[in-house]
Length: 181
Image 1 (cartoon, helix red, strand yellow):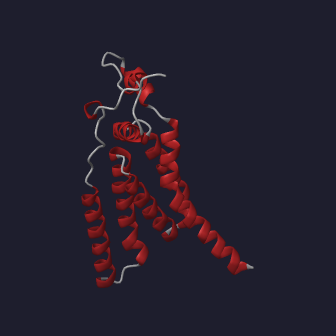
Image 2: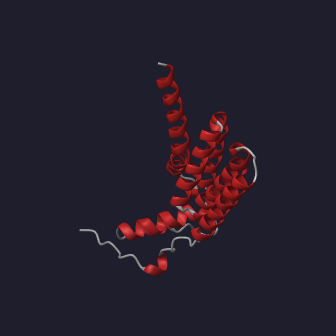
Image 3: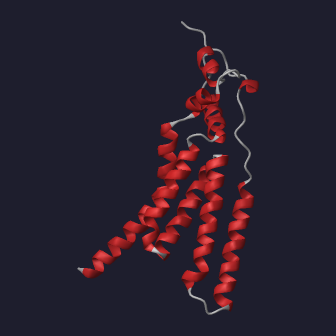
């Protein structure tokens, strides 16, 4: 029987602390200003909502990528879905942006810390796993990047960011298809 060392709290980095309340507060403020502008002026809904959706996508997308906050990724995807509903021809550029953000998630250090924290919460690490989770400090930059890169993280991030816009585009297509039948 092999002995498994218990996880010591000092060896596991805490998940990154990214206060999402500031992003939520900024998003609520943007939506509130948009509502006031829409009611106070006779501008079109498209002209008022387009910059707000872009700002929400950028803000929540960066919190998702850099802070490893999954809820922010879904909020960025929901804002992207709103943009697709507002302007359907933006789907392909939005998917390209989602792919770029997902590639950023593949190297973002916040995701590495969250994954280490999740692994520690799920069960004790063996000595070999603990050594593998803590890279030596004398490695070259290229080697560190290769060790931090996770293709599964990139795919998961892309799915989180692209789900809502794809669903909105499908809903628009389906509605159009049923009306033409």
